[in-house]
Amino acid sequence: MSRHKDLFDKIGELEAADTPYGLATIFMVQGSSSGKVGDKALYDANGRRIIGYIGGGCIENRVAATVQEAIAEGKPKTVNIDLDSDEMGMGIPCGGYMSVIVEPQLKVPTLLVRGMGRAVEVLCQMAHTLNFKVVVQTPEEEVERYPDVDKIITDPLEMDDIDFDVNYFVLATHHRDDDRISCEAIKRGIPFVAVVASGKKTGIIIDYLRENGITDKDLERFHAPAGLDLEAKTAEEIALSILSEMVMHRNGGTGHPLRSMSAVESEKETS
Image 1 (cartoon, rainbow, N blue to C red):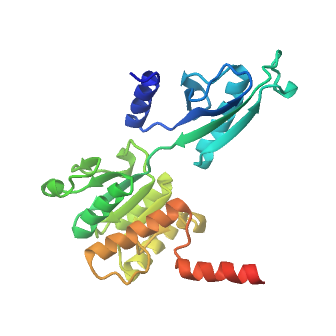
Image 2: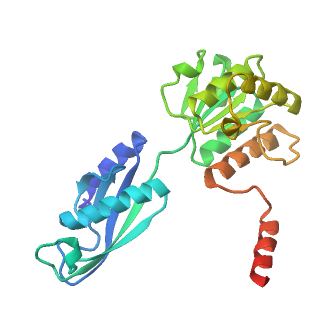
Image 3: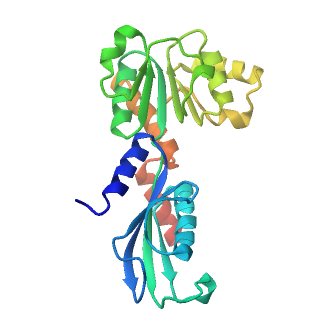
């Protein structure tokens, strides 16, 4: 049985609850240290140790602060701790040195899709493959078309009724109230609100949004017509263009061809 069984069990609980956490692991020790290579500890998003052990209070404080930074930035970090440093307030220096890697585990982004049709089906499949938590609202007779999604809602759902975090919202209903739903989604603070619509309908929706208090700053979160310009022809290509825009948003990309980006970098290097 693994000596970290309880810790791994706790990781399973946190993953099931979609709770962010940081895993700290000692990977190098020189000299004297109470923590040993391979020791691990779990921390919550506030830097509070949940379970495990990597050393005394001064070490834990440094690692806790690093966990908070790693979770905030979404990137692993290493922290090198000089156990012989007077600045750490050790009282009795250990005379050692250790390195710890902190791996942040963030909440999986949630995609809420409202609508039906082949493009919605493919969008949900692809989003699941790319590790989005997918929730779809669709008619009861369409349920079997979404075997991979995390949750299916068949009842009417107003924005005020949503009791879970939504990071990405795609509206593909083509209803008369798409303007109202879009406005409510933006006012709710959803970071990415997209509507599958024509250019003409998008203009009508934007007029409605402005008339109902949506500012230019708010409109930066509004994506319509949804997707990147791929000259998409099929439902599958439309789904790909929408998901491509979502990934670009999630990763902070530009959507420009990498070939053109490489050319720009080359010009900078030679100038």
